[in-house]
Image (tube, rainbow, N blue to C red; front, side, top):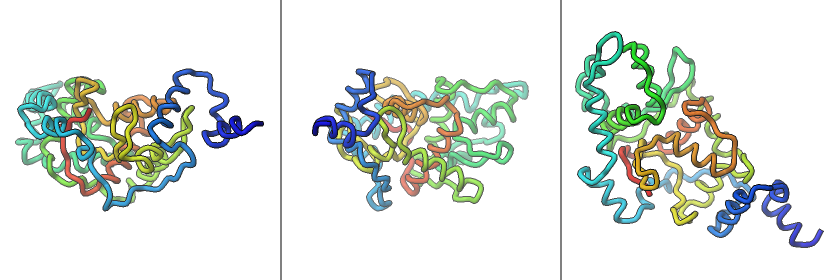
Length: 281
């Protein structure tokens, strides 16, 4: 084996020589060109004192859009969510407001605590799932589809009530094993690129990949409006995009694995302020 073959088999990973997909090879080339280290996997978390919101990586014009509620397109979903909050639904004919009254008071700080443990299900649920559980349990209504405008709107409205509040996921014995599972997912190599989330977001943050900043995976502003999407989107949409980018087996919306990963990421972001609806490239 010559030195070139040895480099590809050992420096980039044994799997590389078996890759058949041109798209996968291009993706690896992009990582190398961006200076993203893909081996070895350091799996070292960013110290809390060095953690930064994705907002700090944004260009001034993107920050300006987020900061101005009259320019932030995510506020359109917030307004729709407010209308849904006050709309009666389901067999009970109740609106969210009938139980929770003024969201500005009752929902303040709620998004900062999700995902949270659901005793009936004996597992954590994220904010979108909690909204749908309220619809099915309390309103006897049909749950909203994941990534539907209605679910994104109501989630954005509820989360916006916590804007500025410190992220504070519960640290309980019930949640601890799920946080550990989420951390394992984040640290574990997977997919054809043999990468872990930590490879980019712990070891190579503040670099650029395909023109975009590599941030620290701190979900402070979801649902977010992404200029690339030209729409509001959930954290799970972003996670699924990343998993696809790693050429790994993806998960359905609402899958326990994605909720566990969300929970770990919110734990990483503990103490940082909620920004919903954030704006990103």
